[in-house]
Amino acid sequence: MRPTAGAHESTAERLRAGAFARTMWVVEGEQTFSSQMSFQSDNRWFPPVEHASPEGLLAVGGDLSSERLLEAYKLGIFPWYSHGQPILWWSPDPRAVLYPARFTISRSLGKSLRNRGYRVTVDTAFEDVIQHCAKPRRKDPQGDTWITGDMIGAYLELHRLGYAHSFETWDGGKLVGGLYGVSLGAAYFGESMFSSARDASKIALAQLVHVARRWGFHFIDCQISSAHIQKLGAELVPRAVFLRELASALDRTGRIGKWRLPGDMGPLSA
Image 1 (cartoon, rainbow, N blue to C red):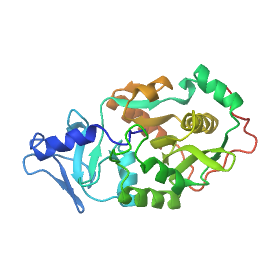
Image 2 (image 1 turned 90 degrees about the horizontal axis):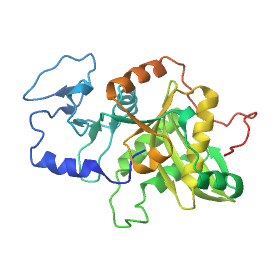
Image 3 (image 1 turned 180 degrees about the horizontal axis):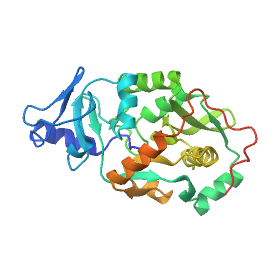
Image 4 (image 1 turned 90 degrees about the vertical axis):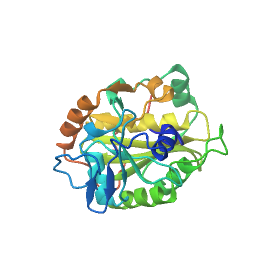
């Protein structure tokens, strides 16, 4: 789960200064190339992830077509950039991962699960969730966002195709929290979350974990670590380990199409 704005902004400044000139890979059309290096890759769109910068930046450019995005996720790569920047493709090392069995429910979250009366749904308000996630955070109302109009359109298309899914937290008839991401095989790639009421995004995540356990998902990819996500049980794993676990998850048949909570699934509990 990535913050509204973050490390990619300082990285972009370094790009403009030429700091990564020796390791920059440019994605253009159907080709990936570097004017200073050559590589062998079976993939037509991305270089090997081992060529990423220390910050995890792998390549620049390309597009957000569904085909390219799905290929990126299968390789452990994701897009992350802001308005005015080219598309930046990332594969950080280490990787933040949440294993469903290790999800941590704090005392305050447990209290919210028991007492706040929130209701959680799946895939009923995907566009609303991503639009909320795209808004600047209350702590930085003038801040930029990496969820650009092009990103919104790309993930709406992935949702239409049955690969992107949202979890929504409701207080009565009001949407107060949620998250969205991409699912392939037995992996869920978390993109972003929002909350306008206490613990509302955490409760959406708790429901995702509940479903992931039921369906046998191997992990929830949180991509970039933060103190917030670590408190919920996410941990850092080396990229090589993540890629092995990703390959195993991709061997499983995915759940493509609109998701529904299993009718016999018990309620969320602390």
